[in-house]
Amino acid sequence: MNNNFFLNIIEKLLIYNSNFVITNKNVDNNLGNFLKKFGIISLKRVSDEDFKKICIVTGCKLKVNLNIIDDISKYCVGKSEEIFEQSINTKIILTIRGCRFCRGNTIVIRGPSNYMLDELSRGLWDSISIIKKSFEGDKFVIGGGSLEIFLSVLIEKFACLLKSKEQIATLEFSNSLLEIPKILFRNSCLNEIDLINKIRTIYNSCLLTKNFDLKDIGVDLKTGLIQNNFYKGIIEPRMSKVKSYQIATEVVISLLRIDDVISNKS
Image 1: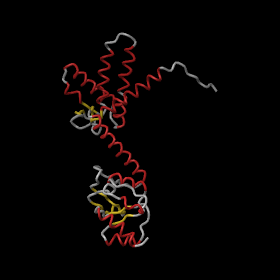
Image 2: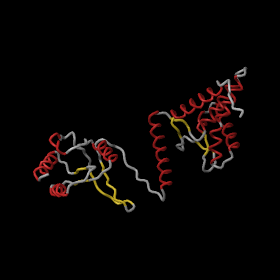
Image 3: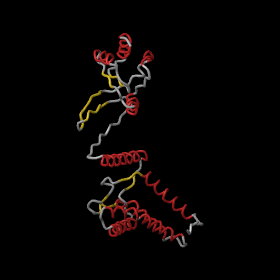
Image 4: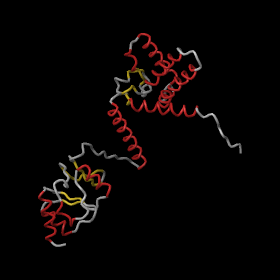
């Protein structure tokens, strides 16, 4: 390639105020020197995965061959406010800020081992997914096992109104809801039986006196004290709760429909 070809490329880039070039291949030394003279920075040997992400957030389009440089337009050029390098834990990281089509941020996780990084990444992803689901559903329920205990009390009262064998199945469904708060309290080294009985007593008095300010009562898993979980911000997305109850109920119904079991005696 001659200098005229390089000058043609640089002239086309300068028309649209381009000052940063990214490629997943190598950059010729002559081309690199020409770019530096005109104030254009080049980044070479970028992985295909990172290249696609940069194209998405900045709005640029991938050019397979520089020989078709003539079809470059302002719609092919990406945009960002600033691009700079920073050192994080002895590693140089290229940071792109103020991208055209990206309002998010990149979270850099540091840890002593790959196992710890995987656990942190998984926990962070779960937290972001919960927040995302919460905003999608636009409705919340009280977390920390409070909802399950309150539903158990309501279903138990409903079961008392039944006068057939359905009452037994309804009571069992009511008791099965208590397994979730039991596991939460047990994992927090708390007395699950004592706490569940206290909260059930509060909910029963709430229904009798119609004082629905007590319906948000729950347990602080760190201290084991009774508190208002809504004021403490312990909430869960309503959508995920409904889906989990539906899936669990469908699984139980499928098991109950099994009327024949074939076993291998050998």
